[in-house]
Image: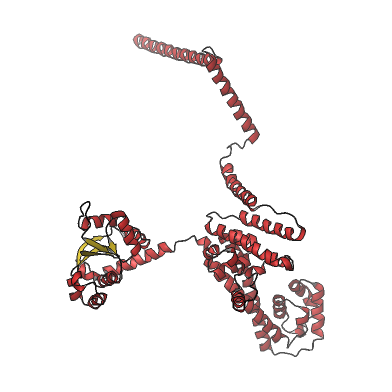
Amino acid sequence: MALYVLYESASGYGLFLAHGIDEIGQNTEGVRSSVSDLNRFGKVVKLAAFSPYDSALDALNQCNAISEGQMTDELRNFLELTLPKVKEGKKPKFSLGVAEPKLGSNIYEVTKIPCQSNEFILEIVRGVRLHFDRFIENLKPGDLEKAQLGLGHSYSRAKVKFNVNRVDNMVIQAIFLLDTLDKDINSFSMRAREWYSWHFPELAKIVNDNFLYAKVAKYVENKSQLSEGNLSDLTDIVGDEDKAKEIIEAAKASMGQDLSQIDLINVKQFAQRVIDLAEYRKKLYDYLVSKMNDIAPNLAALIGEVVGARLISHAGSLTNLAKCPSSTLQILGAEKALFRALKTRGNTPKYGLIFHSSFIGRASARNKGRMARYLANKCSIASRIDCFLEKSTTAFGEKLREQVEERLDFYDKGVAPRKNIDVMKSAITTVESKEDEPAAFMNGDAKDKPKTEKKKKEKQKTEQDEREEKNDANGGDGTAKKKKKKRKDEMEVDAAVAVDEGKRKKKKKSRNDMSE
């Protein structure tokens, strides 16, 4: 039985005929040893046909189809024209070797051409790939590499095409950086407190906030130069006049040691770095909130931007989070405790990252586990809506949040919550009403007439039409027919008058010409 091998290159489809397969006995080791030698490999494998791609776009389409295991019309025509014809009712005396088993099964389903894919075929394809430029005539050196490079770039671009406003990787990086900044700002702030406390130790007890402490340390610098004239500036920084007065009084009776000018300059510069980091942290948080509202608006509306971003980051992507069942989402972030409990046969954890949600903290101790399970269920629904819904909306997240609030009331006060199907229906109607509002605004009356007047006119018009139709149905002498006949007679009279006037003007003009 003859063996044909299909090879999909960057420049076109190649069909190769493998000779002497029966003698080799499909020995994979024998083929592997002969692959590197073109003289030996060329005696076994011969080029049967080659079909180049029409354009770079055609090459990309063929590559995408092959990667998905689909046979295109061009490939089908190429195989039907080059492979031997098979008579009806008879088995083919050849087989087709392909590298992709999915492509082979698709070819067999459509064309009934027997296909095979095994290690022996892969070794032959490897040899063809190695010596492909030698099999094709008139192929200049470097052309194949250029075609492979161009197709590789276009294929990669097509694979990573996405909506730039919904890239969850940006959220993952932002939340990682936010956590790192929190640790760094805390460490730097403590270092600034310890450093400046050698000069002004009383300030650490008066100003507790790290950001405000850095700003005050930068402004005060040398405590001996602080006076009542600095009260207004200190009040603007601290936000409290009494606290500003306390700082000035403490500076006068401070027990700290004096620092040299170069030491004070370094302390001031370090305090400025802490302030810059804290301000950048605020900007990064605003950026994270805006990205979460674009990527996962319903999840952000339900559980908050930071907790939602942590869930996406821990799962790896929004798609992975949507694939997680609610039981997995409930304990995301508590994997160590889970496996430790399984190993020691203890109690498994009730919650992971969702513990940082305010709902868990508001629930009573005996209802925290129930609340975590219910919240994980709603977060799973919200993440799936965000992942697979094309239009961005927060309606579902707001309704799910209302459900969680109702569940809290049910646990505390016993108030029965609404059913999930009713809440989802109300959310769908809210989304549809929001979509209809701009359409109604765009299709509104050009003269901005009130809707009531427009409805009245339409109603009057329909009533008048119904009357005319009734009159037509009742008899030939209806009012509508009389009106039509009257209009027709008037139009005929007007036309006759216009014709007579035209004739008179012509006669008058001819008489004047004759008299002249």
